[in-house]
Length: 136
Image (cartoon, rainbow, N blue to C red; front, top):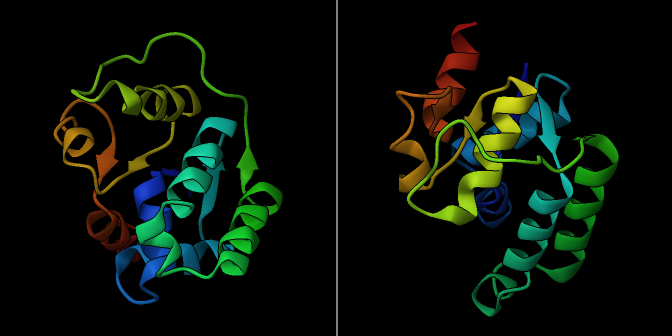
């Protein structure tokens, strides 16, 4: 199955090696899940990993290795153009909505603004998406 994982999910997987975000990344490493990423998402992950509060929790070499893996093993697609089918209360999340809609893939996020739209697009929390994968 293909999916777009929000930057907050990807960074959470690096911060804590247990929990749903970490398990989703493990499934990706095991080939059970295909991650769809674009340049904007990669840039957001990179910026987040460079924040001081995150740098204290994730070694810089681990952060660099993870970004490299996302670029080399993830399905890198073009940034979305145009507006998403629906908008988030946070305009910074709209590219994720547009990306998931264009790629016809679920969006997995821990962001409340994004999760609030789950009735309109296939959007799940990491835990709900993991449970869905385990049932399949």
